[in-house]
Length: 131
Image (cartoon, rainbow, N blue to C red; front, side):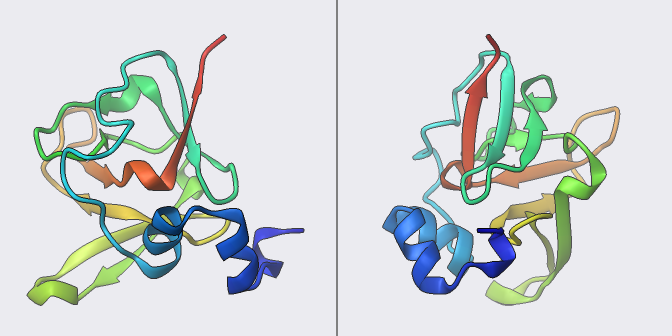
């Protein structure tokens, strides 16, 4: 079944309760709690909801914020974005370009070459180590 054909009940069956809250309800995991925060192996970070390739390990950096951070997506169409006016501030929310699952937020304070920081919930990601 294609991600766009899944019902919310299908998503609840496919994801853990915590993943559902992040990917489908735009929750944020507590800082420094994510399983992938300290992951350093070569590989690919994919959407935990649909498997879409999102980020390559060589674009990950330690932002000190408590969430996995990347300076660019694996491909431009992998990530969608829109304005988020929640929590009394304006931010850019990023979501999976395929299933539209909430991933995290985008900030303009990352390293070169892009100057961007994609701040992503570990629960929204699945890591595939390089073989």
